Length: 95
Image (tube, rainbow, N blue to C red; front, side):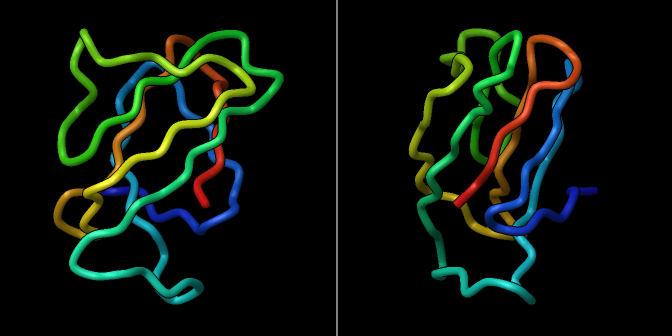
């Protein structure tokens, strides 16, 4: 079951993959799919891998602290955003 997050909310992820769905009660999400900008926290000690619709594979590009990535093709409730940190306590924000 996916974890619900809000746009602009700081999210903490660890070394277990987590599936996220955007709370549509607080934001208008384009359908059928949308593009999200994801920003990693400056204080992260490790990296975060992101993917759409599946657990981030081993070869997925990892995003370091204080960087951003654009993820397209997210279909809220169907092909959700996934994140996997290299260590506990890695933070990111979706906007």
